Length: 491
Image 1 (tube, rainbow, N blue to C red):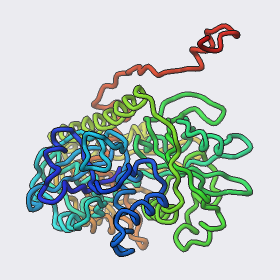
Image 2 (tube, rainbow, N blue to C red):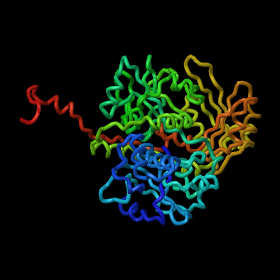
Image 3 (cartoon, rainbow, N blue to C red):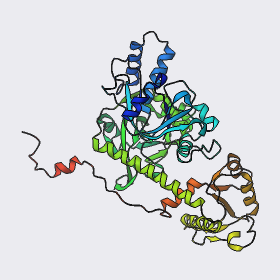
Image 4 (cartoon, helix red, strand yellow):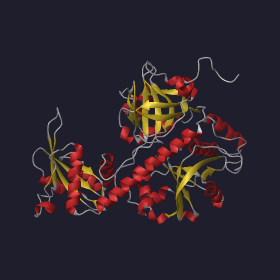
C-alpha cells in the first residue's frame, strides 16, 4: 500500500468539506465534465480545452495529478492532508473509489476515507520524511524509505523510527499471469468482470489494495491490463490451485505492453516476472512497478463495470481485517518487549520450533546462570526430509530500540563450523547492522526484527486467537440454478 499527500486547497478551503463528508478530493472544478472514467488521452484533451492558455508542462502536471488521484490511488492507501503551514497533518485511509458528486461542485473527484488521526505534528517525522512532503502539488506520492511502515509507527507510537530502522515497505505490486490456452483473460478484460485468481506463490504477502499487472503468456506475451486485489487470500480449490483472491480489472493496456518491448527496456529487461517465469502470481519490485506505470500511463483505458454495494462493503471489511491483524501484531510485539530475558529466550526457542527445529533449546545466560556461550542464547537443528541438517545459533535481544553491528560481529565470532547464525530482537536493526549481516566476505547472519517475529508468531497461533467470519456474497448463478428452464425473466 502507498502513502499519498492530498492538499485541501488554497488556505485549506476544502478542509471543512473533507472533515464533514469524510472524504479527500481534488479541485479543477473548471472542467466541464467529470474526469472519472476517462482515458488518459481523453483527460489530456479535456485539460487542454479547459485551460487553453496553460503551457504543455503545466497541462501534463495537471493530467498526472488528476489521473493519479482517480486511477493510481487504491483502496487501503494512506492519505496525508497537510494542515496550517504544514506544521501538522491529518491522516486517513482510502476506503472508496474515485467518484464525482453533484453536491460538491468545487471538487471534480473525491474518495471516501476513514480518518485515522486528526492532527499529527510534523515534528514527529524524521527530517527525510518531512522534506518529502514539501512538494507544492495538490496530489503526489512522497517517497521516503519505508513510508507506509514509518507513518503507521507514527500513528501508533508518535515516533518515526527513521530511514535506517529497517527495510523498504513491500512493494504491494504483482504480476498475475494466464496461459491463453487455459484461461481467456482478454474476454474478462473486455467484460470488466471481477475475477478470482489463483495465488500459488507468496499468498501470505498478498493484501487487498495491492496493484496487479495482468500478463498473458505465449506467442503474444505481454501486459494487457491492470487492476487491484480486492480480498484476502482464501482456501478454495480450482483447476489452477488451492488458494484464490478476488481481483478487480480496472483498466486495459491498449496497445498491450508486449514482451518484446519490456525485454528491450533497461530496467524491465531483467525482471523475471515479465520474462516467462512460471507461476500464477509473481512479486514485482517497487522500481519495476513504477516503470510499468510510466510506460503504460498513456495506454490505460478504464474498463466499464459497476461494483455492487455488497462487494464494496466486503472490500472494506477485508481492509479492516488487514488493519486489525496489523494492530494485533503490534500489540503482541508490545507484550514481547515486556517479557523477562528468560521468557524472551523461550520465545526465540518457540520461533525456531515454528521453523522446524524440534530440538530447540535455551542455553543463554538467563538459563545457565553464567555469562552465556559467547552471546548464543538458543540453539536448534533444522532437519527437513531430503535436505542436509542445519545447525542454528540464536542471540536474543529484547530491546525497543535499534540493534547495531557489534551484536552481529559478536555472534559471528562465536559460531562453530557449519553453524548458521541468527539474531532475533523485539526492536529493529540499524542500517549498519544489516550491512554487516549481509557482508559477502563473511558468513551471513539472519536478522529477525520485532515486526517479523510478531508476524510469524501470530500467523502460527502463538499469542493470538483467531475467529472465522462467514461473509455472504451475491451468487446469481446459484439463484438461476433454482429456476425452471423456462423462466427467463419478467413477462
